[in-house]
Every structure is written in C-alpha cells, then in structure tokens.
Image 1 (cartoon, rainbow, N blue to C red):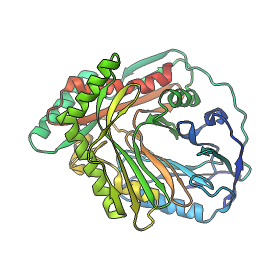
Image 2: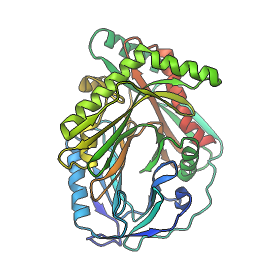
Image 3: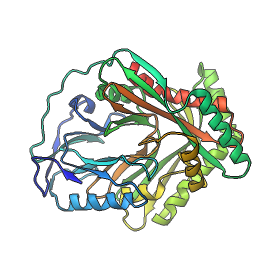
Amino acid sequence: MSVALGITRPLPVRTTSIGDPGDLLHSLPKTAPYAWIRHGEGLVGWGEAARTEIPPGPGRFTWARQWLTEIFNDAHINDDVRTPGSGPVAFGTFTFDEDSPGSVLIVPQAILARRDGQAWLTTIGDAPLEPHTPIHEPGRISYGDGSLTAPEWETVVAKAAQRIRDGELDKVVLARDLLATAEHPIDIRLLLTRLATRYPECYTFSVAGLVGATPELLIRRTGQDIESLVLAGTTPRGTGPGDDLTRGQALLDSAKDRHEHEYAIASVRQALAPLCSTLRTPDEPELLVLPNVQHLASHVTGTLADGASVLDVVAAMHPTAAVGGTPTQTAINAIRELEGMDRAGYAGPVGWIDAHGDGEWGIALRSGLINGRTARLFAGGGIMGDSDPASELAEAQAKFRVMQYALEG
C-alpha cells in the first residue's frame, strides 16, 4: 500500500468542467498512461497519487475494497461535476487466477474524461502537466513461441475436449501466449490509438502495462443500475459480405457455440441474482461483428438491491464461464494443469471505480503485457466436448491479430 511521494494524506482532489479536449488519447504523456476508451469517450489518466499491490488469495477483492474505502473516505474532494467517473478514480487490473500475484489498483494524479457531451479534469495535489511528446513507432516486430508451441497447444485442447466427453466438466476456456519483440521500445500510446481507431466498439484499456481492446463488458454500475455484455461463441470474419453473412448465420445455428453461450449466461445470472432486485437476460443471443471476428452476444441488465459497489459485483462475477468454464472450480483446476502458463492479467477484470462505487470493468481479452521492447500477447477460446483442436488454434490466431495490428499497424 502506498501513496505517491509529494502528495499528502488526505488526498486533495479537485474536479472541474472543461471544454471539449478533443481526442483524449492525444493528451497522454509517454510514461505509464491509464486509459478506458470506447467510441472516443471514457477516461485517461497519468501520474500516481496512490497505488497498491493487492495480495493474492480468495480475499483479494475484499482487501482491495477496504483499501479503496480508506483512500476515498479520507480524501478532501471538491467535485463540481458529480457524475460517474468524476472525483478520484482508481484504475485496476486483477489477475485471472486469484492465487497469482500482480493485481494492482492505482489512483492517478490527473484524469481527463468525457461522456455524453460533458468533459472534466480531475487533479490530485499538484498533478504533473507533462507535455505531450511525439509518439514513436516500435520498428520491426519479431514473434516467438510463448509457453507452448502451436502443436503442443492443440494437444492440450484435445486433452481438454476428452475430459469433457468423459464427464469431468462441461466447458473449459484455454488460452495461449505469443511473445513479440520490437526493434525499439513500445510506446503504449501508439497501441491505444490504433486499437481505439480500429475497434471503436471495444473498450480500449491501459493499466500497469496491460494493454488491449476487449469486446466484453463484465459490469457497468451507474447508481443502482448495472449492465453486462456476455460474449461466448466466435467465428472469424468472412472473405466478403456474402461469406460474412454465411459465417454469422452458421454461428447463430451452431449447437456447440449456442451451448457454450448458454453456459456463459447461466454463470452471469447465478452471480448477479443474489445482488439484484431485478435482473433481465435476453432469450436469444445476437451477433456482435468486429473487424476480425463475430461473437454471440447477450446484454444483461439489472438493478442492485443493496448498494453494492462495482467492485463487489466484479468479485461476485469473476471468473465467468466465458473465460473460465463450467463447473467453475473444476475448470480453473484444469486450466492450471493444462495451460502451462500464468495468465497474469489476461482474462481477469480490468477497469475503473470512483468514490461512489460507480465504474466500468471489462474482461481483459485481446490484450498484451508491455515491458520495454517486449510484449506478451494472449488469446484463447471456449473448449467443448466436440471442439476441433485445429479450429480452436485458428480462432486463437484470429484473436492474436488484434494486438499484432496494434504493434505493426
């Protein structure tokens, strides 16, 4: 647990309305940028007013909530805007596996935000007004195997499918990693700009070196209202409009993918029902069409019963069947045994929370861990009993292209 040097406790916070700042990402300095952007709206931040490394274990979300309560309740807040995302905000990333270290919460010194035609600036103490420096290209990118080669990963998929057919579990989500090395240090702002431009329907994020564009909204809390976007079932985009329509219809008609999607919806419903006075799930999924893939998607909405914060809802929901499997603990054990790697923040919750408990958290898909000239990219997919290893490998490779595009342009 730490508070940045030069900033006294309690934190002095000031939020003021401002004119349209233009592209939020253009305001970011090079060092450690934070971002949560969709369709040009959202929040970006820089500097560090407070930061904590969250201890791993089953109580990590409770520990994080207590830390946030202490920081926010102790702050001196002057907020002229009074809307979700104004006042002090913490950006966070939690590892997929509760037993893995690396979960982080950070309160930036400066936050620039825009939503629904309103823009504001939050500063804590004497927030650094760092100049915007030119964005640099990473140069040539080379790739190497991550924890497993492609054939080794296909073997793992086959083993998982056999376990499902044997009745050990119903579904498991398996991921793989890919290592990228750049000629020059990787400028996170370049990745964010490319991702936000090419994938405007996704949530483009940057927290503690974890960068990506996820299509999956785990939870949004605005007052007592919550919303979640559940994705499960994927097919690559077609070679043209006709092929696209054919692939989309095949996805809608696929028994395997519909079954996978039903598990994901049931997982979300089971997690949210105890927290909600009302909960609405659609009868049929729709297609979410992105530049690289199509997903089966369902919007889930509800009303919280007891004033739980967005982080409390995240704690109840993670891991969903869409990123873990069913039954949950059996799937997590299979992932630990079969994947041969630590996912770190991949497929874990990533997002932000304000002092009122409002916020938005996604599942960190289509992402990578950036460190200097290196990037560790992640992708995966849901495995069922009739999954074909070659097809699952192709699906993961299609998902890798999101971050490969961000690196290469």
